[in-house]
Length: 206
Image (cartoon, rainbow, N blue to C red; front, side, top):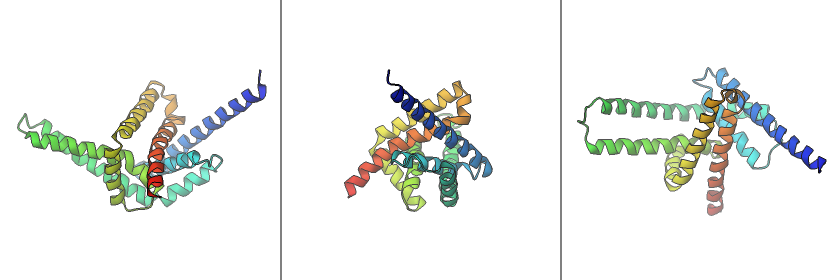
């Protein structure tokens, strides 16, 4: 029996459990610190950025200091992006309410346009935050790139959606996960797929 190998494996597993739990707790703390309405978006960017650094080999970064710095640096930009997305979502929802109360009087063209806009909106949600955590650029540019990325890589967009849905579903089945693992595991999956795409993009442009 390879005791050293087993001990090393257990140590690695426990280390990652600790990292993910700490990241999740920090996301909750800093989201609450921003009264949720101003804290969720910079906390999400910080979580995604830390996951990216882990995937780039920076596994021993100080999580607390790094999270706090990113939260502060990206506070304004992430909130502008997040609330712009929320506003667009509200407009889509209001349009949906109008359509649902029109009793079949809505043109098929309007219905098609609504679902097309919803599809583009989902792409913006999925790709804008990883783009902001990776690249400098304006909010509008990130949204444009998010739409392009989402359409060109629709299979990866669907994969991210499915993974995030699965993490959410399991968390609702086991609520104890929400405090320690839901956000961190979701961010890790989200970052893992988006980083694969970004690396291909960077390789193609170099």
